[in-house]
Length: 559
Image (cartoon, rainbow, N blue to C red; front, side, top):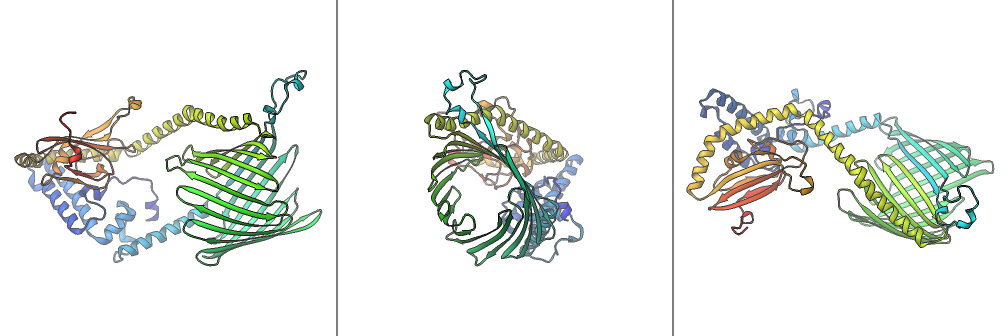
């Protein structure tokens, strides 16, 4: 069963959409819809051999859908696993006599087991590459000092430091994990590296512990311990100690953090650090759907400071964030502001401008690509210059807009088109089958639709004049794209009852007489109808519920 569920095959049969009922439909609603469709598709109502065969296929499909959704156990399995879950022989995964709640619990247990197996097969690599750039020659140079120097007319931009780190995880058992990491650093021609091995064990649902062994040519051997523990439901603690061995002797260090949930979105932290740089730190972090706020106060050697930062999260598809912070202490004062945005499915690009005394002006560019981070700190000036601040602010914005328009958007558009083509090729056989079923259903509906129209005309009721389903192109900038729609006038008229048409919140491609004309693309339903002799029109999204008629759909005679 687990193997069957992991297949990427798409199930085209949506039983809820086929019966045109909501997912919370009662037994009475299911029965009423089933009877209506049985009257439409019953084979005995059709004398033509070809129509009779098509009616029998559709009748069996409707009957299968009703059998599944009317049985609580089968319905629960269908809701969780889909149609494939019902095709497993012997019900190997769940017992037929279990309740829907028990079936869902069983499914969650299987999910956890599959997650554990996948966890054991992956190494979860993480890496950071940082390249420091010295660009102070752009702003802090005197032109007359370079007049006699060959090439002196061009400012020098140098890479003065670099850092590379990488780590991989190796799950040993369900509760034990080994983490191997290493790093290399260089600055102004001098560098070094280190390597470490961490063994982590989850002792219970409330805590875990780590043992770390490390070695390097800059700091010497390292031995450390770390413990995490949930003290209560709202409070946890981490304690860490280590011993660094070097030519100058042994350097012990300790670090303890106590954290507590102050409310649903707010955490409070107390941290004590002892060693070569001892300090006490308290901070409050509030994280909501639209913002992130941090306030921190530290007293220590050699640095004491107060820091406050705020980040606003836009509720858009690109997950845009703008942020600002102020940090002041014995080292001086630093003001930072910046933004970050998602540029692809797995990539986030950010830029931050740092203005400080005595640090000067810097631009920090950061790219997160899946589990890899690329960081480029660019030091512009050692003093605060308006020109450096302007270019650090405007430069990344202009560069991003140009790259977004010329590179990112064309690439994402091409990638989306390729994905759609692959998806359509994969589902081509299923689409062809659904199209044949839809065309057969429309033929079987003709007599019923004729009677419905006669009845509606006699009472000045609801007449569907035209209905189209699929992808509509209304934006002038997308005129080159081709509309992909199908005529669904007959199927919609067939669903009219007592001068009303009600469609539930489900994809309309599963309705009788419908199919998906543009797999993977956004679809809508456009209906032109007449009610009480007055013209109406409505455009509805694929997953939106629709009730017809409505006063708001009326087309004014003046327009």
